[in-house]
Amino acid sequence: METSIREQASSLELDTMPGAVTCARHYTTATLQTWSLPDDVIETAGLLVSELATNTVLHGQEPAPACPCPESGGAGRFWLRLHRNEARLLIEVQDMHTCPPVPQHAAVTAESGRGLLLVKELSHKWGYYYAGLYKIVWFEVWPAPPPIPLVSPDTRQGHSAARPARREHRGTSQAAAART
Image (tube, rainbow, N blue to C red; front, side, top):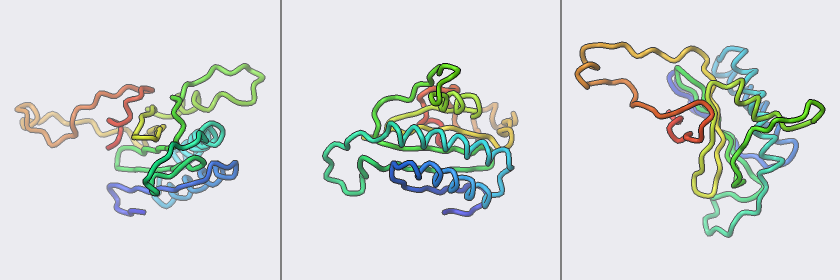
């Protein structure tokens, strides 16, 4: 786990078993507490990690294709990654399920089917992307409002130290751009 003030990252590999959901949530909340994030951010992140981990346990157990790379993982495993910088917290859950995540409109009496709706409503941004054999569902929670870029003479002349332009929209699958 990195511990710099500006950026921090941590990850965990888990089996797709029911106990993994609790483990993922506890790992998330404990890690974010050590990073001194606000309680409301920790609570929201823990809830949303639980929802994504539950989806992975229920749906992310497709048989893995034959792969000569032992480090590529396999069916029955998923990965949780936490990334933080001064402006945002990015959380990714990676599995080998190939179907895209689609928010459902569950019946009032349904016991499941609301997880992605919670992710959509409680995160600032969310989406998914594919990396090789893996699907990665991500969301961002902003501990503080992102910094507003200042307009200076340097930026008006095309010389900017600011981050590059991004083409993201809340809830899109262009998560590759969401990585900071």
